[in-house]
Image (cartoon, rainbow, N blue to C red; front, side, top):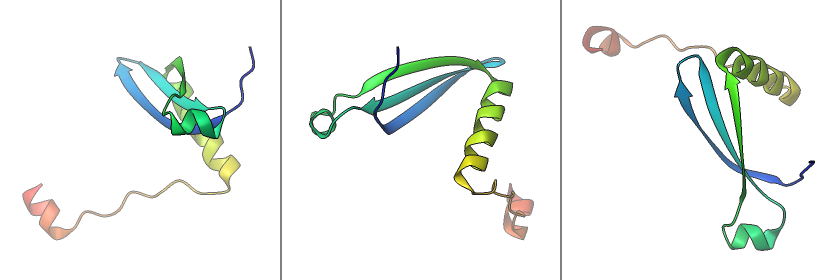
Length: 78
């Protein structure tokens, strides 16, 4: 089954070494106006999630964000 639509949202839940990725898409403006998305769920390992995330970052032409140094306030008070 192949499906096309515009991505309108996603969430995830974690279960040990796996993730359940929930993706919402709409096929038309009318479906978006009704707030009636198609919902797809994907079970994957956390390693698969890393591979997918890395692929999407590269595909977008962006770079992964670097962790920021913690301010002195955060270092002192957590």
